[in-house]
Image (cartoon, helix red, strand yellow):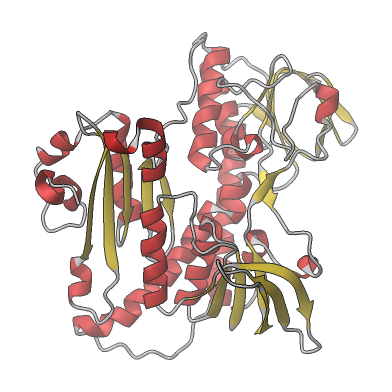
Length: 464
C-alpha cells in the first residue's frame, strides 16, 4: 500500500501531525500505525492517569484540612482504590475511543500492529508493506530498569497504573519528576513510602532552589527520603515482600551498605529510553545516538530523506505538548509550504505534580549565569504561606523566583512551588515567551488575594 504520509506511533505527536496534515490537505492518504493503545504514554500510562491520581491525593489532603475550616468529617479510614482504578481506566478507555474516532473523521487509516522498517520510507506491519512519500517516527519511549540483580521483580511507572490494590509500604527509586510525583501521591494516600535518591538532591535538572524547597516541604510532611544511595540488588522474601540492598555514599564519608525491608512494591523511576530497538531503523538509513534516540535537526528531519521524528523518541524535552507542537509544525512545513516552520524549544513551560506542585519556564539560575554571566543576572524571590493554609494546622510554603537578565531585567526564568502553581504557570509562560521585563510585571495590577499576585508585586524592585 502506498500512502502520502504515514506515522509510526499513535501517541500525541503522531496523531497531532497526522490530523493537522489531513486538515491542511484533505486529499492526502494518511495512515497511522500503533502496536498498543492509541494516545501513547500520556493518555495510557502518563499525564492523564497520573493527574487523576494527583487529584485523588489532593482530595485526601483536603479531607485532613476540613476540620480546620469548621467541618466535622467522619473518616472511616477507607479509600476504595479498586473503585477509583475502575473509573480511571474507563476514562482512559473512553479517550482511546475518542482518538480512534477522530482519526476516522479525518479519513486517516488506523493500522493496529507492530511496524518495522524494511527499506527507506517502507514499513511492514503483520506481513503487509506500507510505503509513504513522507514517514514520521513517533514511537515514544518506555521506563528504564537498571542492570542489577532483582530489577526484573520491580515495577515502573507503567505498572503503577495496573496495581489492583493500594500497597501499605512502597519503595520508589529515583529523583526525577516521575519518582517525586508518584512518591508524593502514595504518601498523601497514607502509604508508608520511601524515596531513594542517588545524590543529595531531587529534581536536579530544575532550578536548585526549587529542589531545595520541595525537599524541605517533603520532610515537613513526613515523606521519607534516603539520599546518596545507589541500588545494588532487590530481593524477594518468602512472604512476598521485597528487600532493598544499596550503598550509601555521603560526601566525605566511607561508603556503607544499607538494607531496607518489608516493601509490598518496589518501583524504579530512574529515566526513560526510546522505543527504537526493534524498528529496523538501519534499513531506513536513520541515525541514532548511543542511547537509541533518533537524531533530528531543528526541523525534525532525520538523516534519511522524507523521514522525520518527533516526541520522546528524539530524547529532547519529553513532554506531550512538545510532541504535539512539533508534529503540527512539521505538517505545516511539509503540506502547507511553510518552509521555515519549526518548534522553538526555548522557554517550554513544565509542571511537576508533586505535593506541593511546581511550575517552571525558562532558564534555571545556573543556566542563566552560565549563559549571561552571574554579574548580568538579578534574582527576585519570595517565600510565604498561601492564604488557604492560614486556617489549617499544616503550613506548606509557596516559593517564587524570577531570574532577570540585566540591564533591562528581562525575565528569562520563572519558577514557582506551591498551591496552584500548576494552574498559574501557563499565563506567566506567555509573558516569558513574549520577553516581558520585571518592570512590566511590576506595572501589572495585582489580583488580590491570590498567590499569583506575588509575581507582580515581588520586592518592588529590590533584589534578595
